[in-house]
Figure 1 (tube, rainbow, N blue to C red):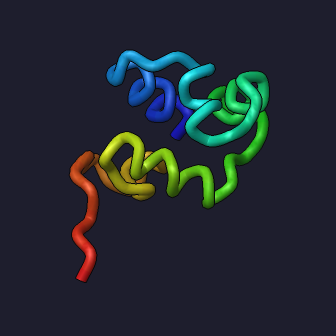
Figure 2 (cartoon, rainbow, N blue to C red):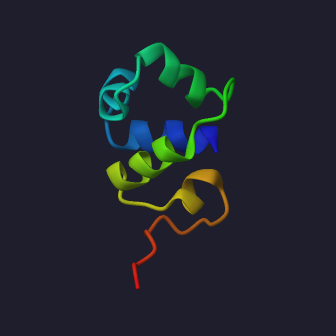
Length: 72
């Protein structure tokens, strides 16, 4: 999961500071989440999935399909 977070960030040419602003948290806290030293809350995973136009399932490694699920 943590490698996916980092890879998505880099693929989108974003810094940890950019993402921390999106999540409204400090850069140091985001760094802790991205390195896996602390579990990232589901609310923040949801924001990241929207930011990267993917699903939480992709971020956490439950699927390799980057395309987000469609709402019914």
